Image (cartoon, rainbow, N blue to C red):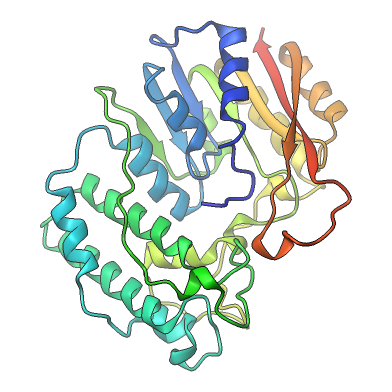
Length: 333
């Protein structure tokens, strides 16, 4: 997924920095990714650490990390289930009726054909779950597969704050459900869907990785469509874009971010804390440093980074195509 703030391209930088601080052997360490997003960083360390604790408040993120981090044994009959879902007849369900042109709302997040296919697959996954035809691990594997496959053919500029007026080339392609395959090992990891500042009071470990929102973009709004597919609940979509109700993050507000950040650091029962942030964030590097160094030994590593671009941005001129990514480091005293 082309995800705002994704650490996919920065994963080597993060991993090398963690190794340089704590050592290359994490086999006896608990690693926590508490703002997990799509789970990239947790996935990088899944085979390295004794245990991964992964968390995100957004349900679509929880589905992804529940699959990629929570699942560690192979899924029985995986290929057969994927094949059955791909062969389903289209259904005029909630997605088609509210987020496709054929539904009459004027919204066009997906082609009519793909909207109906998303509905058919999502309904069948739910039926299997209700009838106990699949277990919880398989449910999240299939749902994560649907989210990622749907995102590939969405008619948006990468995020779901708006849809495009005309179907772009990738949105004209037919949805093909592809498996969200995950790494297997013998470790029992823990996955949460909680407010990070509340969860931090109830967990402990060795390494805490923080990747909070940098700016005022609310993930609940930018990825509301994925939440709707994942939850598949009944509600009245609001406004032109069909928004659902969502919780606003304190980390997306300049008036509340510092207080929330310091509360998190203060309550963290982890020896090593790594914070990903950049030079365009709501908190300056001086603010981050002033907070973190209150609680132990502080350090900073930086690297250049290609800024996030939505599809519609690719031919526009930006003030800068690159941004500076900071990895703030704290060894708590």
